[in-house]
Image (tube, rainbow, N blue to C red; front, side, top):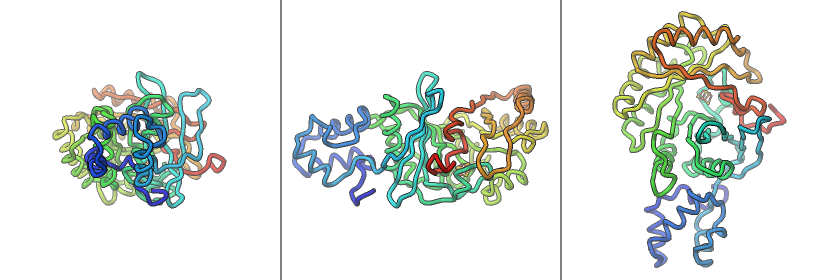
Length: 346
Ligand code: SF4
């Protein structure tokens, strides 16, 4: 909310129906507005040309379209990754990333401005938390990315922030993504990544929309994991994994375990074997991500041989492994690099 008006992205079709009804308007107006917003991705009421001008003016008095102001757009040298930076109310900056390649583009969306989790290998964590994003600010990113891509991609909530500590905004945003009257994405096209917030995982298991859930593991050993991810001190692995097992059972979705390989730190064979046994117990897949350098962090990208060996150990244990490519490193849009700072400061 930049100027006191609510974002229309935060309005449900039901609340819009009430708004139109109160003005003596037919119910099909809701469908018209939703089509402009979620299928055509327009960012102003003036462009909604099948609505009478007086109605467009009335909408603009009560609502703004996007609560985000785009302040920077960077494209990687290969043209496949685009990073959008937005200023939000209060002046903080957030970032979202469009990745092309594959059948559909992928949209990496932020849930908070900054992050309080303090993971040692992450630029967002190093900057601390400014504030939670509202539902309209989450959806505003999806619409802006859809505008840039020309279509709605798969959504991964893996940008800045920990989505499971902002569920009051994230759950209605998931509803909007899955709602046939809005984006109409199947829940399988949405993935939420968490550092392991046990109560948040349990709450997600009772939500209306249950996306794919990715747990950022990064060490299968509590002691090392707490060093890398301080939140593990509050929610140790055993409880987190138990909640993940409950989520997988309830949602019928296969868990994804994410593992950032930090050269010489968490790449031992012992770690690979422990991760394999964790994955097998959960029937989870593992996604390996070679660490992307972050200014001010002492970790190194692993040697290729280190990554190969780690992966081979998992595969020999029968675990399905995928590896995320180091996309967008040149524009600091790769995993763990979103800092919310202007590009000149990185
Ligand atoms: S890795 Fe995720 S949870 Fe950890 S500090 Fe970065 S944004 Fe926060």
